[in-house]
Image (cartoon, rainbow, N blue to C red; front, side, top):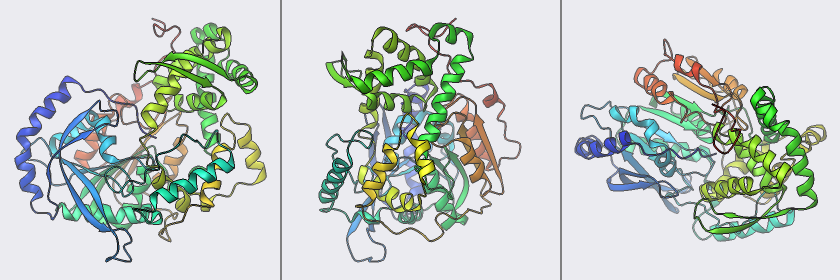
Length: 498
């Protein structure tokens, strides 16, 4: 999943100003490659952030086995290092999803990479099927795995396939082909070795690139780690439930939160039962437009808020208060506002067709969910809806090429820094522990109480910059991460207790 938006600080603005003086040096270095770059601007999906960069397009065969067949263009952006004496090995930033564009992801979190950007180019490749690289966007009609019937999911999937057929053979958008693209971009830009930051699904791409091109990688940061051995998604509802239960338990363990709200789990169960019988119409102000809005709030909307609340400590901090207000006084506006914000920020961030190709080729075929496990899933707040929906989509969606060793353990000498949130609802710390076995030189950091993706955690920018500078985990100073704690629970709308 995408990360929360990062604001643009004065320091960042100064970095952008200094960037102009470094473009000429960056151009000279890139001239050695075969990819022509021109000035461009990178924008976050909501238009809140603007990054000056150098962009170009690289044509590659859609089907590498048919090099004279249909060609697609890959969008590439380079944010040149500020220093005129920059290091030769850039940082490639790989977004999550699957289906998020690296350019828009970076635009939302660019300040976090500021220390690395001082001395190294930042390279962004919109993975085939995303962003500016022949995006497989389906222009969704509003359906969702969690609230649609199987028949509706099948109809929407068929509509999407028909829409995409005009400009893409959707089966040729898998990770195995994407890592070949990534190396072509590296070569075209004239870089010998690179550093990689991968987020969520991007950790899969990073590990597969290391598997195919180990000599090209100097160091790798994996944030929200998915081990190669895992087919993600089959039992994700269990991890989501565990993360939510942990948030509720943390509130119960804090006297101020417990005395103010009682049991958040009890509030949730009450709301769930009431909404199952009678969904509620909520009148509120749209948090992104400021316009009046009316929303029918049901268990689907509640489940989405609960799921995303466990992704970040900031949203989790509001959850007991929001649940209590809804259950005790019928005030659903805060929960409805959270849902709308989630829908507006993330609804258009993912290229659904590319997501379906990856999931239906690399994950769902490897699911093995028996009746006992399905019964466990049914007891969670998400239930079996995601699993049922994915299986329905993948009965129709074409499968693409996947390397035979795709789900085999990785064995690598590349220095690796693995980052996990102790309360991650989708890639829990045990996933990083499994992935770390594949690296001879690795360090796995777990931040207690935090959710999915540690990129924007306090002091993480410094830890990452230190690691990339050294390309080693030996002696890495991570003391600041041991002082991190999740945001305290809000007791009122004014904030936590003093």
